[in-house]
Image 1 (tube, protein in one colour):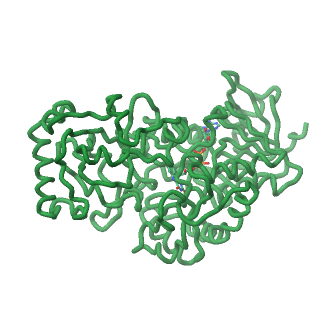
Image 2 (tube, rainbow, N blue to C red):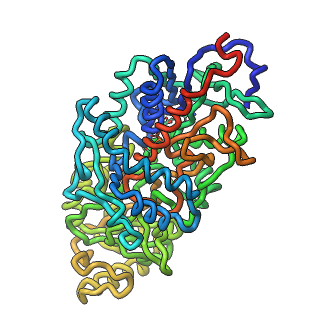
Image 3 (cartoon, rainbow, N blue to C red):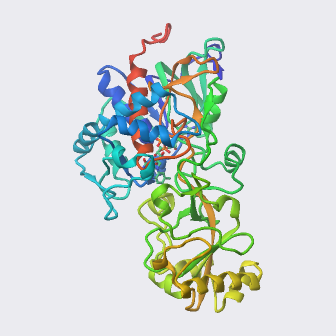
Length: 506
Ligand SMILES: Cc1cc2nc3c(=O)[nH]c(=O)nc-3n(C[C@H](O)[C@H](O)[C@H](O)COP(=O)(O)OP(=O)(O)OC[C@H]3O[C@@H](n4cnc5c(N)ncnc54)[C@H](O)[C@@H]3O)c2cc1C
């Protein structure tokens, strides 16, 4: 932390400083602006304007809508058993959740955008992830704001831009907080702009909303125990907020859960892009399998795992699919699957939505680039992959025999998806673990106050969104974005209620 004494002169000042311009930062700014007509709000983001929006911009944009606080309480409590959310926080969150929808609708109206039930990109009106834990009663529906992609983010961005006392500065990376070493009270922050360090005085409070650490492989290794993992979202979400909050004396939580809340998805990592491509989950044909390091199938590939955030039930518990332990994993497929399926999802994730990569619908461009390996026989394909040809041939012929029998004795794949890998040429692409979000960070309460090691709130410091999310273990679709709203609003509301610190006015 930087001390107040180390600041000779502040370079900039504001009432409320918000670090991170994703949905959580946007909600904090909107609520602060609407809560105090006199306050100045400064939002800073490390990204240039064209890369702004964080994970919020590239999310599936699904919002959890609940009408039943008691059922939601039971459901979330059941999903969090291995690391329970404090009961007072859980209760207050459920109350906030059942009251949230009109505020979202108001934001959509203000932006001139359409709020709808459903995903906006599929027929599905609701995703209820864990029915036996109470999803049926807890989740009324999932909703979104059009357009797809990025609709929710675009609507909230438009709301920010309509409010005259919110300033947004891009290319401005928060690197430290200015604090009292004894009380931990926060007076502002140090930022870097174009290689120059500047100080920003925050007369009332600072909100940390800098997202997760999906883009920092070493942190994934140290905190999650993942050997390989790549971000589906913003690659520059590298855990800056986590490091700053550690230095600021905050207690950490949810860095590693019993399971990875957002799930470990199958993705395609190529050297040209920092983020990973999200594999399609709307298949037209099923002549494909995945094989692990030992050249064997290792799970039920066509189970609709996107509906449980890539959790499958093992030993009576919903746990992550084994991708992160089975690596290196390859997906093997034939000409039928190549011709009838685009391998990736285009409506969300960083590479198609922000980086602008247009994956070819028949995957031909990616074969030409060498991202997808092609061969005339399975043995040749295995050789290209550096795998044992006999072992890979065995895996494919065992699978094809299961298709012929109409029964997958090994993993219980749906018989309708048992289509043989039979039509040459054959293809393979490496599957790497893909991370939706990380969740961990500083412990906070429902008022978004950051908690210090002694259990007290750090004065004038708030945290919102994915950084320090309340969720660990299982997660219901649409909870992260709505958490950004609830925690962001609390941070903004409480931040501007703080009186200016003594000496701040000078
Ligand atoms: C592919 C994908 C699909 C998803 N689908 C859904 C969904 O459908 N529903 C749902 O609820 N959730 C979904 N999620 C999760 C959800 O998107 C995130 O949890 C949420 O957007 C996090 O918002 P945030 O505001 O906390 O962080 P972000 O939106 O990631 O914003 C953080 C911002 O902080 C900035 N920043 C980072 N470090 C600094 C620094 N040092 N100084 C200044 N700025 C900094 C970043 O540039 C970024 O703009 C999805 C995520 C992904 C990747």
